[in-house]
Amino acid sequence: MADMFEFPKVEVDRERVTLYRTPFPKLTEAKVAQLAELHGMKAKPQDADSRIVFRDRVATLELFRASNSIRWSKLGNGKTEVKANGRRPALPDDHAARKGAAAFLRERKVPTKGAAVDSITHAMFARGERRRKTVEEYPIAVHVNYRYELDGLPVLGPGAKIQVTYADRKGPVEMYVFWRAPKADGELTLLAPRAALALLRRDPEFAELREGDAEVIYRNARLGYYALPPRESQGALIPVYAFDGTVSTRALERYDFRRYVVAVKLTPEDAKQVDAAFRSAGPVFS
Amino acid sequence: MADIGIEWVKKYHGRAKDLSNTQAQAEGLYNTLSGVRRFNWGDDLAWDQDFEQQGTGSPTTGTDNTWIDTVDIAFFSGHGSTAGPLFGVASRDDGTAKPTELRLGNNNLEWLALDACEVLNWDSGNVFANWGWPVFKGLHYILGFHTTTRDESKRGQYLAENLNSGDRVRDAWRKACQETEDSTTEYAYLRADGNGTNTFDDHWWGKGFVSSDPSSPTVLFFLRDSC
Image (tube, rainbow over all chains, first blue to last red; front, side, top):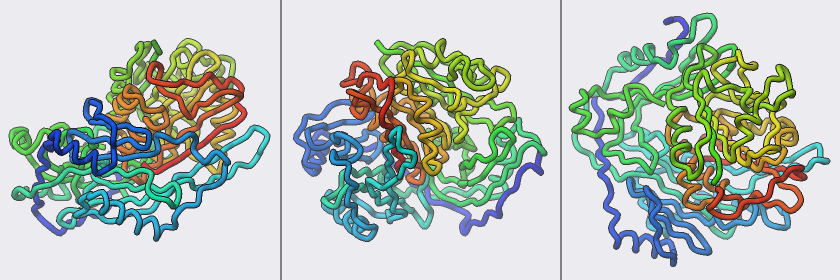
C-alpha cells in the first residue's frame, strides 16, 4: 500500500510547543448587557441553546456561550440578494475595505491580538432568466478575512478567524469573531514528523483504496494549532500537523482534502487533564 | 409538521476515499430539526436512484417519488463533484445522482442540501444549465458548495438549530458554513422564483414565512460566498 502515497518533506523548527488553555468563558448577565450595548442592540436576549441571540429591526447579535465568539449581522433583514432596482452595489476597494475593517473592529472593541488580514474575498451573485443564454456573475459583497497566529504558528480550523463584510460603501453589514482567549500553560513535547507520517500511512480512511486504482498525494504540511467551531467547548487548542492532499480514483478524479494529525503524544489520562477535545479528535482527523 | 429525510455515505468501497463524519453530520440535522423523521439511509443503503426521477436518464431507475421528493427537506452528506453527489454503491443505478436525472419539487421537496464538494461549482455559469432549469420543478433551494468542503460532523446540527431558531433558510446555511469551514471554502446556493413566489424569505415550516412553490420558475439566483 505504501506506493499509493506520496508525502512532502516535513520540517519543524522546534521540539516542544506551548500548551494554550482556553477556559470556558464566563458570560455573565453584566457582560451580555455590555456587549449588547456596544453593538447597539435594543432587543431582549433570547436563549438559543449554545448561543444568546438578540434580534431587532436593524441587526442580529449572537453571543456564543462556549467560546469568546460573537457574530453581528444586518444581512438577515435584507429583502433580496441585491437592491430592488437590480443595480450592482458600489463596493469599497480592497484597501478601503481593509482600512475600514480595522477601524470597525477598534470601534466595537474587538481584541485582535495575534490576528492579521489573511485575504480579501467577494460574495459572487448571478441571476439567470430562462430566455437569456449568457449569465454574468458579479460581486455583491467584499469580505476582509483575518486569521490568528500564536507563537509563530497558525491557528487552524473554523474556530479562529474574523470576517468583516461590506455590501456597500456605507459601513460593515456583518462581522464575526470566532476565537477563544488563550492562556499559555507550560509546554508539550512535539510528536516527531516521521511519527505523524506513520499515522497517516495507517489512516483507515484509505484502507479500501488500492495501488493502481488510486493515488494519494500529500502536497504540503505545516505545524499549527486547531480550534473547534465556536459553539463547541474546547479547554485547550490542539497542536496539529496539517497535511493538504489530493486523492484520485476512477469514480472521483480529484478530491482535495486536509488531514490533521495531533502533534503531541498524550495518554488518555493525560489528555483528560489537558482537555477532552484531544481525546475526541482522535490521532488523525479532518 | 414537515418531513425530513437524510442520506449519507462513509464507506466508498474504493470508489473514493472513505469519510468519517458524514453520518454524524446528517444525523445532526435529522435529530435536531423540528419535524417528522421520515428516512435515514446510510452507506450501502444510500442510492443515487433515491434522488432521481423515474424514466429520466440512463439507467432510468429513479425512485425520488418514494424518497427524496416525498419530504420537505433532504440532506445528503458525502463526496461530490460538478457531476453530482457520489454514492458508495453503483449497482442500484450508476452511483452518481446526476442533475440531468433530477426533477425535484413536483411532488413535495422544498429544500435540498448537498453537503458535498463542488456540487454547486459556478463552472463559468454552467451551474444554471446543469442544476437550474431542468431540476427545479417546485423545489425552492439547493444548498451546497462551490469549492471543496471539509468532512466534518457539526454542520447538519447547526443548520437545524438555526432553522429552529427562526433564521431564513439562506441565512441558516450561511451561518452554519461560516462556523464549520475556513474562509477559503465557498458555500453556494441556487434558488428559484416564479410568478407570485418569494423564496428569498423562506423559513423552515412553522418558523416563519414559506413561499408557495415555484413550479415553473422564471428566474434562478446563484450565490457563492466565503465561509
